[in-house]
Image: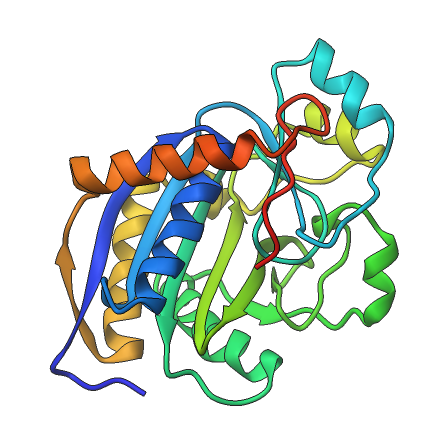
Length: 260
């Protein structure tokens, strides 16, 4: 799949709105399909609390709409599948590439291995979830843990991931739940959660990004070239995001992307 001479792009962390983050991921996938950019890894954070819902998630709790009017929280559509994710106090990774082979669960695990390796390097052991297809009836992605998700030894779901495969290329991105607001989570999903391990709470984002970048370099046997988004790329991304939002909003920032 890769070799030691392969150069991947590493985009420095970006903090912006959920709508823009999703459009960046879409745009990077399209550019990779066109052969304009190499495999790319990036990490990002959200400029305000945001609920992202899966591309095929047609229904979600009605109170999310009213909540969005009373709490500074956005609701956006992901280009990938899965259930709703509350992005607050989390770090998201996105990997865009090609050449991965096997069933979908195999590809998940090929990619997720760098996350397992990275977290293990600081003493946090992760394992895959075991939930079956019943998760689809739960609007909360972090309410269950499937074979695409990574949980700590105490059962805390640290990472939930989702995929879009198109024209032989893949976008896999996922949320690492580092320091959740327990009250906000309960308001959104109507259930309580515990905080992660103290060893996770003590970490800052630059440390996590560095350890996961090093793990990705070793796992995929690649070298990274740090390359921020250029002004030209930002211009294309913003234009595409504007065109996308003009398709029509559900409410409070929810948009229907065109079919991938």
